[in-house]
Amino acid sequence: MAHLDIRGLVARYNNATVLDGIDLSIERGEIVSLIGPSGSGKSTLLRVISGLLPPREGTVSLAGETINYADRRSLRRSRDKLAIVFQQYNLFGNMNVLRNVMVAPVTIQKRDKKTVEAEARALLDKVGLGDKLTSYPDELSGGQQQRVAIARALCLKPDILLLDEVTSALDPERVGEVLDTVKMLAADNMTLLIVSHEMGFVREVSHRVAFMADGKIQEMGPPAQIFGAPQQPRTQAFVSRILGH
Amino acid sequence: MHYVLHYGQIAPYLPYLIGGMAISLALSVLSFIGGMVLGLFFAVIRNEGHPILSRLVRIYVAFFTNTPQLVQIYVIYFGLPDFGILFSPFAAVLIGMTLNAAAYLTEILRAGLGTVHAQELDAAETLGMNRLQTLRHVTLPHLFRVAMPALTNQYILMTLGTSMASIFGVEELTGRAFNINSTTFRSIEIFTTVAVLYVVVTFIATILLALVGRWAFRARVPVL
Image (cartoon, rainbow over the protein chains, first blue to last red):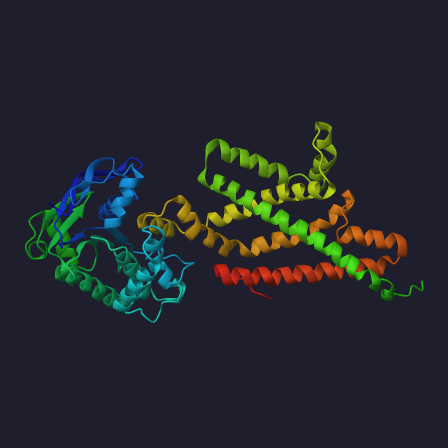
């Protein structure tokens, strides 16, 4: 059974169709990356999966259970299994680093505060921010904030992690530290769905790469195929443009 | 003119004036708290954009911010008894000030709610927070952080506004000053002393609110 199964997903902003019949199946422990030009629907797909934009048609299933986006309880259950890290970090500005990581497990999942704190400290250590527990987001660099955001998502103990252009808002010298953190997750066998413009990174960590354009997956295959021998003309054009630079 | 200042004549009345200040503070603190509760409720309604409730709040705010507070309290104190609703002078002033404050605070809080980052709300949603949890953990701390300077100003204005309670016979600071003046006729000494007391109280309130804002909400408010 697929870990994350998406069938015929359609989403619209007002009347504009931004996802036009997406089919995507991801196995447990698999790392799939979405690439494609801006406006192709990559980030929207993650927003729909995470419930920020309700789908107009189609289904999303997590480990066999179809998410009912109209039902808060079903959505709530899916959020125990699935977490998202945003391009702009989206940390809570009024909370320090430790509280940012702890707030959801303690107040939403109702887990024991001491246990969660120990886990949060361990996670922040793991992403190299063990000395920033009492800092506030506006006192951190972009790379540090992004690593806090990853620790916050991981503290929910998700089965699947969605990463939405997690390096796009960072200075070039900060990109490496975040990518190293993601590689660490990949090594932990976590199911990852990644939207990224870092082609070298995508090529290195992904099991499969999906090329999206016009709200559709135009081509999907192993990195060697997508970057080495793309089948579709649009993929070829995109890849040659990207790799040419 | 050879007027000689005699502050010594006022000194015995200082405890009496300070007692009046306590009544002024009771009025300002209670009406501010009441106004905050109502204002927050109304601001959330405005922010949610419910078609009917939002319009009712707009009418409320327009009415209370476009009529004098004094007239509003007149209606409560002198008008409502015609319908069998009687309030003590203190209660009438307190209700009037609360309703008036609620209108101004609605606008301050509504503006603050508009500055909550959409990204933080997205994060709250995807972390699984419900509306109440988002309000408590994300929206309100942000709101108080950005609105603290405006809330402090509003509180100071309300403290100074308590002086109108004397018109209704409430013996707050200004009311007690009138009482002393009618027996001593030392107007300059009395009213300058009262002015200094108002300055001291509002100064302390400004510092306290700035400290609370900094400590609780990381508000960037200069303490002095």
